[in-house]
Length: 375
Ligand SMILES: [Zn+2]
Image 1 (cartoon, rainbow, N blue to C red):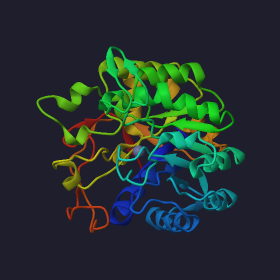
Image 2: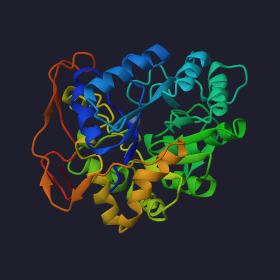
Image 3: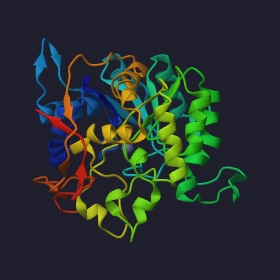
């Protein structure tokens, strides 16, 4: 298949970056690089520095003047992100979007937006940043979750009062019903990508409103698992992500969305490695290393759904087109051959992001995967 594009990737920094980046570069021609590192990527200079680190870690080869792996940088939307810092990145064509994190709801989101209303309230910095994005036809990437109900809200019989904390399984539905329409209304010309879509109501919304200015990325984990898999015989930290895995009804709707072959639905692995000390602990971090089988797991999911013939558009064409990019003219080869994820990975020194431990447990450790990347 043509070398695909991963539109949602956490490469991390330091030794983790050196562990993960080569896995990604082997499988993907480009990747949207998430900015929630420590510290978050909020200036043009930080973008340049991080890009340099990634290029060193991937050791990308240049064939006829083109790299075989292209990191597509993003900036972290904070309450104070300066529009001129973004403009510098957009002008240099290093930055392709800005990522919205709701404060406190996922990994390294402490610098995220305190009040989503600042996205649609004129006069705020985030509003100015969104206008800048729209002017450049660049993308707002949304971690589509709210922590608290904004109004009286009823989600399939669960009632919330204003300000009430949301059930984790209701965070995305609340955002889709209450927050996303307000952002769209305030910025109808802005390209928006709903990241790692995880719910039936999200699938429905995309079906109705998806198009040139609205799309979504989907992970393999949300197509392969339902919440029984996360809690079977006990809580499984290495199957825990934000957004949380939903019930089978939601998974089926996401599989249906993929099988329908919409041009506004694309691959975003959301590979998000953590040292084992941050997973097997009192407060388990969301996210798991997927990059060791970043495309293989999508082949498995699409084969299960019965729509392997739809994979190429999903993985290679749709995402790049939304970001005004061309699909890769490089190829990778996969064979249908079972292999087992036999061992955990180790990084030499993960002091920047770890609790001092250096082991990373990949998805499916001790289990097998049906598709294998060759050469
Ligand atoms: Zn992510």
